[in-house]
Length: 466
View 1 (tube, rainbow, N blue to C red):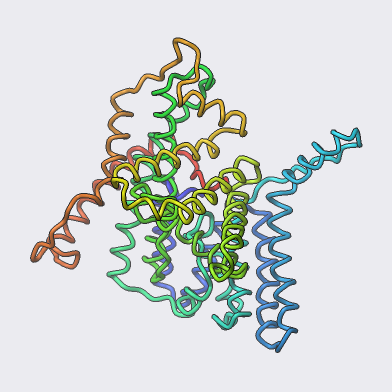
View 2 (view 1 turned 60 degrees about the horizontal axis):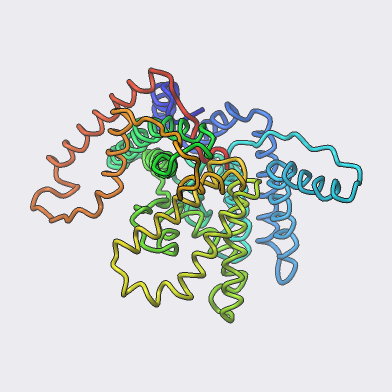
């Protein structure tokens, strides 16, 4: 059930909120909606997640009751069970395919490659379930007071399929007492509509153009078109994923929950380290808190710190997808983080900011090619076209006026935070006139988005694949 469909926006959501606000048992309504939402897209795996969540809840109680080293037993069982679920559903095909490659080299019989459909949101669900057990073990949170509360943590439908990744210690207390607030509902609704506009009016439209470019054999692309394809895909990816995050955060706010921000103008970053403080913030903070720091973080000798960064980013790439292209993407970003520490921070004060920004974003656009093409060889051929290695008379994809308009709007939104702002008396976010203007703008965005949705050219969210 896509957030950006007429059924979800104009039937599922209104019915849910009507029942949620009128019913006395809000937690029960919340769980029923979450189960319905996930069962709609994953009827079989919904039962698997429910069974695994029941195990987590029991293990959380076990951890809380245990003392000393015995607390590690249920923790290890829970983490292993969740990672096993992720490995079986997401990485079995990848692992067997690579093993068969090695067996073929030594002329050994090949294994049968498993055919398992990737369940929606599995990476996000597993990471959140692990945080629950680790938070209890560390003493950062108490076990859920009821199975209902824990199931609501797992099946909270705004963040269920593509985040933000929510840590249990950030939302556990909120889940016990969902509440209604007209201010939260209004602000959340406007945030949802802005996210919808990002997805339907920008990401989906630019995505059509990006698809046209990437469908061309890259050996036949001219240099300008190749870079235009990278730019279009980079903008599509950002507006698609940040649009989903805005919609998720907005819906949660309408229910009375506060979720972590997931983006902060990432394409304004002037280094790779700064980019990862702005992009997919919930994943970055999860990796830091549950992987990087346990590996030793910054407390170890420099070579170990760099090794830890490499491990974390390689696993981050693998988390995004069961393919060597994602692993290489992660390794490249880890190398970028290491380069920042070794060199970039020492010399960047002498480099004009515009050049630092340009260098960072050229690196980002080049790395996104690994997300978009099927394999490393295709990425290298595409990047070869971007740097002019092509036959004479390379193919160019014609840019229509509507695509030029959407690209311009997207770039303007990316750079809006750079515009100097002055606080005007009576024109803050709480002023009634400003609030009415914002609501009117959101109404326009909703109407136009509904018109585009009615055409039926709806695209799945890109991060559903991860």
